[in-house]
Image (cartoon, rainbow, N blue to C red; front, side):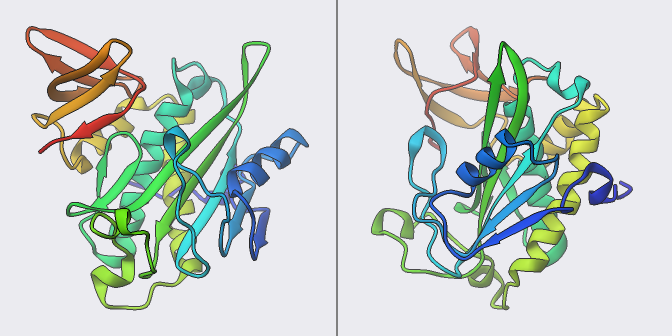
Length: 258
């Protein structure tokens, strides 16, 4: 795969480095609403109110991770997708896994919908938040956190979280990791902008940690549903086999059992 110059998509032309902030996504959203250009990046040494999916807290201690958000202003092919934020999440997962593999040699994998893992432990997470106006997509703020070094994680996270340094026994440099991720993300955003969704889905399937055949539970609007993951569809939804039926999961909490 040929590299797309990140700055060709505006990525990294403007970077805001912060010592501390509540959430890089919130800062990036405010910048986007004020007209900040495509590819503007916000990076913080720590977050006091970092968040993940479903409003969960993203533990962001000082100096332990890469906490960043990028403003994406999709062109027509990507914006025409049914769920552009979901597809961007998949693309970002591919990009981060590819960047980690390229920079560290670690066998990073992706767990639907927004986790990058090494073995059973979470290394990185992604949160894409879309802004709509009058039914039209204005921009997407793509936030991600990568654990670079070990920290005093809360007890509920210790057994299922890892870091670059813990896995490699080598120092992890935040600037290099950011550069690799931005370069990989530029490649994958170029795929999206050109409508090459199949390239994203193919790469995602190759890097998937648990699909197909994994047993899952899903909190549906009608209660807990058990089934087997089969694939993802063109819009990034998880396809879940429940008896003779194929359910399409686009939201809700999915728990991977095996």
